[in-house]
Amino acid sequence: RPDYFTDEDVTLLARLGRVASSRLDFALARDQRRRSEQALSASRQKYRTVLASVEQGILVVDEYDRITMVNSAAERILGEPGYQLMRRSPSWVLQQEDGSPLPRDQWPSAICLREQRVASADMLRVVRADGKLRFVSANASPLPPAEDGRRSVVVCFTDVSSERGAAERL
Image (tube, rainbow, N blue to C red; front, side):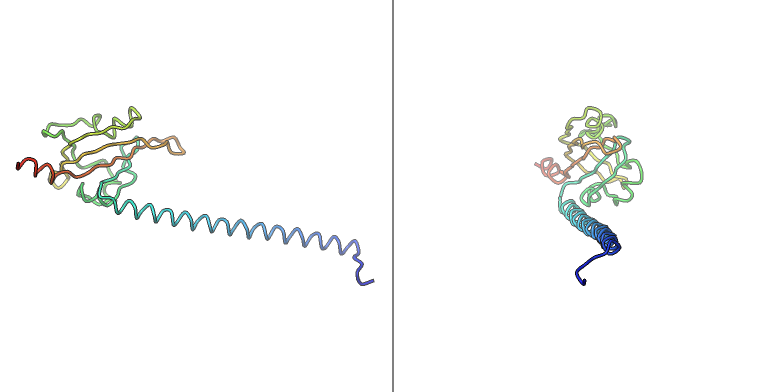
C-alpha cells in the first residue's frame, strides 16, 4: 500500500521533525538576536546624536572620580578631548566665583555622590589645563547604580562666561 508508513518510517519522520524544529528554533533566535542588535545600534546612534547636539557640557562621573562619558560640549568648555578627560583625573581646577579654592568634596559631583541627591552650583570658575578661565553653572544628578553596584552621577554644566562678562561690563 502506498499510503502506509512502517514503524521505521514513523521513527525517521519523528527524527526529521525534531531536527527541523531545532533548526527553526535556532533560526528564530538568530533573527531575534539580529533585530535586537540592530535596535541597540539604532538606539546608541540616537543617544550619540542627542548628546552631540546639546549645548551644555555633560559628564558622567563614577564614585572613583573617573569620567566615564563626555559629550562634545564638555570637551569644548573644558578645553580637552574626551579621550584625555576619560583617561585621568580632572586636569582643570574648580573655584568659587570669587576665585577662592573649591575643595573637591564641595564639587557638585562629590556632594551628589555622597548624599545621593541633586547638587547645584550657580556660578563656578573653571581654570582649564591651558590656563583659560571659564565660568559655568552646574548641577549633578545621581544615576541608578550599575549592575556591579557602582554609583555614578551625571553632571550638566553651561558655559556662562559671556553672560558674566556682559554683566561685569554693565
